[in-house]
Structures are given as structure tokens and as C-alpha cells.
Image (cartoon, rainbow, N blue to C red; front, side):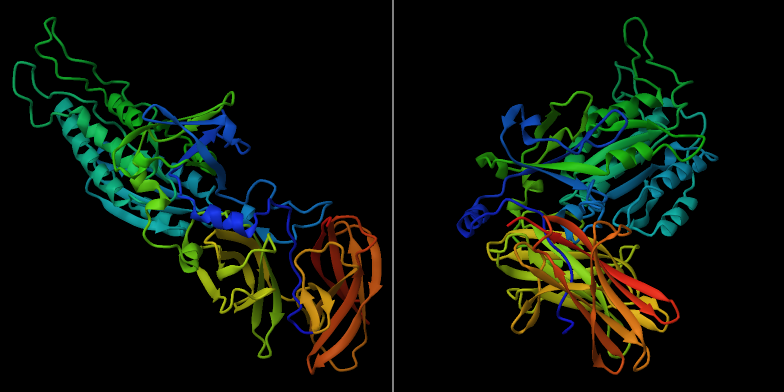
Length: 593
């Protein structure tokens, strides 16, 4: 049997669009997209919202929702256990896409005094423990420290950067000094956010500060403003900048802030009113204008940012029906509400649609762009899977298979990458002819654990990205090695890949056996079970056929006619004379046709 017989995946039932419907959908103008977090009381994201439960108001006017889509920063709940009856999931889909979060850790260095740096390091350690391989962290010191580490998934670099953070604050700060420092910080924060504008995914800003001034005059009311006057406009510009950068704010502060600060300074006529010297009031002001959440620094450990990690592990994208006024760059107020008891919505108070709508993009997305993106795309539903085999020169090859959930879809372009845990791409593949069925590709990589990310664009312009966690390896059985099991159906030209089984009477299972000596005795059995370790429902002998000096192909037929729809574990077991055994498995999904 040829190695083109690939064993993998089947699909779940989905809503199928006709070709005409798909074309009309792709020609329909894209509406602006509003992202928001819906968190329960303990910070756990709400994952089962319906569009009918979400209300979006722009400038106070209720907008109609076209769609509501969940993005998760880890495999979607249930995705890892989506197999039925105890069988592992048979393939990867759009539902398993890991959306990488972007955390911007901003440190107000002039607000902290020496000796408090460890509070920040402890908090960041807690966040690092909750990161996924797709997440990235940037650390910047404001107003003068600059970027200490750019966006990276390398947690060791993040920790080294935090070790280099040095407090620059002064003790016994006057009100004027507090106001000047706050203005410097807000101006540098505005510049940082402007540089982050235009991203398609949310930016989580975690701002560490030990105190900010609220708006104050810095001079008596009867005199001209002092040089450290702090106006409400200094805060309001952050509102606009946060909206353009899709920034969700968490303001993290030591718990003892403001305990010894003085309040408003007035006389009975108000003639000497300056403002408050309480550094907590400016923090409250910044949280208010950004729609942010205040959190205390946990002096005892790493727990301060655990809520941030929980809340940001999933977010919602609400696509609105387009409106003629959406093309304007005018800032608008944003209000998102959810009709669920006990749910808190995190959303920015302002939005500028011209900055956020994909409809304004002048560049059509390409497969190469989608593969390096950190976003989820589910408009085009996909099924993807992988299998391991050995090259003639001994190298390990990972074969991949890609199929649309709707058999009537025609691909325009398809590509794939293999990603290591540190988010480094180790191999790429692009289809030379994306219309082939089945659509197969291959990449040569070292043995190891990888994340397979596949991107596809169909002829109508719809986009889909699917992922699957894979193990690139061969199974060792004494002196032998076993390649991955592959499933398919018999054809006149050989065995063809089948990603989903229905009314077919049989499925062909096969895998390669490498190494060993000619004439070596072995037993080979194929079993059908309901779980990895469960008893066999059916047991069938495998046929062994030599395909080269160091390669034997094991093949068997799985009877499907009598099996009800569901997932089944297909186990191929090889036994040697000395009692050594090994096996390879693949989940087969049968659906009702």
C-alpha cells in the first residue's frame, strides 16, 4: 500500500452553504467588529453567550449584531475531549485554534521607590505560569525606561527583563511633583498606545503604578496655573488611544497606596484650591477613562495577575451590521451589555470603527499572513490532521491532510506550519495545487511535540484557520519502528484518503513497519475498540507486505457496516517472538449519512 494512504480525520456536522450562498456571503460588506470580555464573578469567562443576549450601543444607538464569535487563548472547552465514547479526538478543527494573547506590562518606574521591585516580579511570575505557547509579553518602562523586552513568548527573557527593573521614585513626594510625574507618564503612555494602534486582536495592558495624581491646578485659583497643572484632557487622550489600540486596561497598585496622603487643600473661600495629593485618586481616574479594572499587588506571592489570566483566556467578537457612518474616523462611545446575571463586561469606553473594521483593509489576506497571525478565523470550517513516517534517508517526515467540512467547497490557497512550544515555526508547507482531493502535504522535522496550524482561503474568499496538537515520532518495538496509522477507502487506483466515513462498508487501515531483519517472525493484529484501553469490539489479522529492504506495510479492513455512528479507536499491534509488543492507534469517526 502506498504511503499516500493517509489516516486521519473526520468532521462534525456543520451548516452547509451552497456555492451561491457562499458567494453572496463573501460579497456582503464586512461590518465593524467589537471585542469584549464577559467574566463571571470569579473571573472565569462566560463561554456560551448567544447573540440575542448581547447588546451593543454606539453613541447610545443600539446596533444590530450580524454574528457573535468566541476566541479562546487555549483549546476551546471540550475541544481536547471532543472524541465520543472515550476515543481521542480524530482531528483538529477551527474550534481548537489557540488565540495568542498580547500582554503589555507597563511599569510606571518613577512611582515606585527602591525596595518594592520584588512585588512586580512576583506578580509577573504568576502571569507567566498561566501563559500558553501562543501568548506574548512586552515589558516597557515609562516615561523614560523604554522597551525592556519586545513581544516574546520566551518566559526566560521576560524574567530577565523584570530582574532589570529598577524603581526610580522619590520618597516624600510633593503634590506638584506628583502632578508633574503623572503628566510625564500619561504623555508617554499616549505615545506607546499610538504605536500599538491598528491591531486586529485585543491588547491586554497591565499597568503597574504606585500612584498617580488626579487633575489639579498646581496654583491658587487667583493665580495663573503652575507648570505642573494636570488637566482632565491629559486623561481623556488615553481614552482615545486605548480605543485605537484595542487595549483592555488592568491597573495594578500596592494595597497601601494613599493611606497617608492628604486630601483636597481648600480654605473656606476656595481661593487656595489646588487639588488632591492622594496618589490613589489618579489611579481611579485612569481606570475610569479606560474602562479598566483596579487590582492590588499581592505582597505575599504571585496571585495578583491570576484574575487577569483567567479573564483574558477568552473573548468575544461581535460583528455589527454595517452603517454608512462607520467609515468615519470619528470617536464614538461604546457600551456593551450582556443579559446574564452575575456577568461583568470588559470593554473600552470608546471606539473608532475606521481603525477596527477589517472592511477598511486594502490588502486581501494571504495564507502566509494567516499562518503568522495570532487570531482565529472560522468562516471557512476545516478539518486537519497529521501522521509520521520515515524518509528513505532516515529523516522523520510529518504528512498533513486538509479538507473543508463542506465537501462542495473549492480551495483557492492552503498552507501549513509546525510550531514548537516557544512559538517558533520549524517548518512550512504551501499547496502547489489547492484543488486536489485529498489535499496532502509534508514537512521534514526533528521528532517532538508541535502545534500544526493550517490556513485556507476558498474560491469565494472565505477564510479558515484550524489547529491540532501533534506528536511527530515513530513507535519503537524492539529493533522495529512503526509509522502512524492511516485510514482510507479502497479505489481502483489504490487506497484513497477518507476524512469521514459514513455508508462505506469498510475502511482500510495501514501503517509502515521499518527496520528489522528479513524473515523476522511477528504477529500483527488490528482491533476496533470504543476507547484506548477498552476491550476490542472487533479483532482482525493484519496482512504484512514487504515494500522494500527495510519497510513492511501492515494492512487490514475495518468493517463499518455493522457499527453505529460514533468514534472508534483503531489499534494496530505488532508482537515479536521475544514477547515485545507495540501499537499505533487512530480514531475513526463514522457519521450518519
